Image (tube, rainbow, N blue to C red; front, side):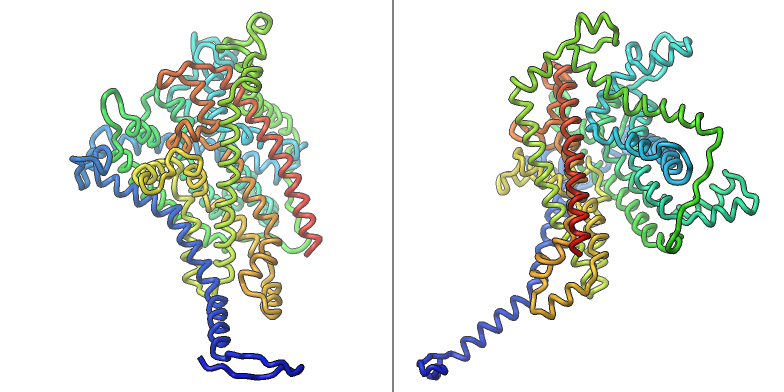
Length: 610
């Protein structure tokens, strides 16, 4: 290569290679130019691996079988779909699952809408206290809460049935039978009201009350105003929340597992679980389980399409007022005391009693009705002493739970943040919309379907990707909920002015440098909120963990369930399980309070900085 001899101002001889430097400058320019392409491709590949690849393994398994797809004698075809379509298969499963899901969602919607309306649109006293009380059941893990309800609804000794019989002495046992469709709908519906409350309260808070006021001035009564004004305005948002709740309830496994097996209910999640577990000398029917998963995945994606359309149309119904807008609150008058009585009864049954029953179970070896004689003769702190100071399985399961929950939340938030920034800042509307739908599509995958998909994929590729049975398979599986973090970080990116990034570009900063030094620090409050939500979900996660469980990756919710049950020859220790549930609930509650304080401090600091 030709070299030129030149001299610098001091007279020193210097060898220069203009062709070489030009090539280096060209390479640097191309790398800088394609940095966003590489980042976008990396995010897409990671999301495909996280969402699409396991679904592909499930589809493959559904077309093979009836046992493992790769065993000798496995056939290829649609026989698995034919097998689940017989008289006692798919039709009955869809019917029972529909009753369970729609019944639970109806109960949850009624509770959530009532509480949201009381908090946001009335002069009900102590609204802040009411808000906190509604959120208390969210702190308790679902598997622990379901077990507490199973004790509360015991036909003979359950405190709820005993209270009903004390007021209405028409029954010798019951009248509520927990191992029934009504029992499952009741428990799941009461627990699901929190989701509707959080979503609907935000809608009511931002809705201009002038239209309702105009209706009242025109002579419309309360119910007519609600039917003709309030609900039509909220319709798009309510439809989206209903669809999300239906998809979520389809993947619920804790309540059907504890309540449904004894009743023989053909709930979708139980069908999959029973097929994978096998019975007697029969091998697990992975093909059958996969076929059920594929069918319900198609159903949920149809719901997701409707959800995407509803959210796209929601902006047409925005009615937030201008500056100085204040929602008009309805005076409850003499109805205040009646409402307070029913609210107190609800909180007693849904928030207080489950915790009290769980604590009582932790104090006695086997559950007996509460009495002072039982307290003096049976109650002890032996379970807490053993769990805290002698039980290494508890500390190991707790450590794994925290590691998996925190790490998976970091992974999901990182991918969602980069995806949100790419979608908001991209110049390609089609590419941005496609990536937006792709990241959001995880909401259309019920937890049970995701659990089966991850189980099959990592089980089939264990020779090449040895993650099955380790904590890392749980980290990847938990992180599939990218839509939860994406919606939060997407809203945060929209609020960041593009001027800051333009100034950085003018100053010579590349887009990756701008993302790391400007966008991410400003997004930190939103990212932390998203991480906190996913972390709480991860500490509670039971459905995915139970499908991927092994002795090396046992998490605390699965350990609690194993000690409540007597499956696989284990000895039941309900007092130890209840003690673990109480400790986990207290630990998560304290951790959430501390992290929320950190979030508020970060938010104040970042606001002041900007």
